[in-house]
Amino acid sequence: MDEFKDRRRRLRFALDTGLRYEVAGRCGAEPIKGDGQVLDISSRGIAFFADRPLERNQRVKVSMDWPAKLDNQTRLRLVLEGVILRTRKNLVVINIEHPEFRTAGKSAAAMSEGILAIADRLEKAGATGATRAAREA
Image 1 (cartoon, rainbow, N blue to C red):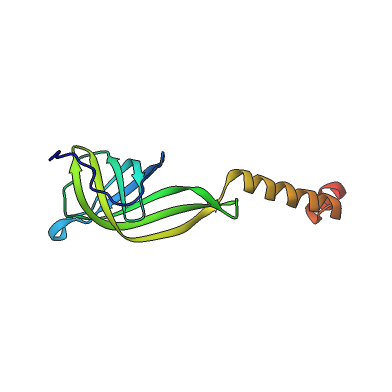
Image 2 (image 1 turned 120 degrees about the horizontal axis):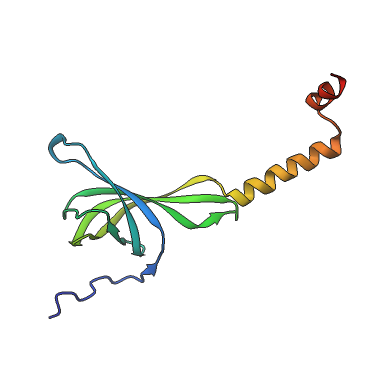
């Protein structure tokens, strides 16, 4: 039997995004924090390249940018918690136990559109108090 046989049963999706991880410290030790690059993700697992080798059976929390936006404006982060199932050098595979999407603020384009809309409304409403005071000075 091939030792590198694919063990995953669910569809995997390639995802080109960075991530941050935090591995729980053992016996009261400080947690290990680092960066990585996602290889692929499924509904129950994620494979990524870490910036250093990690050990199996450790609890890990991963946070990554999600490519889709909420309402086409608000950026999302996917935060996952799980256990490291397998490693090979810096390749890490974790079992996803607790996935959670979190908002990460509006995209730069959406913020620019919002600022332009506010400026347009102010312009249509006439000079603001600060502008009037500057004119009177």
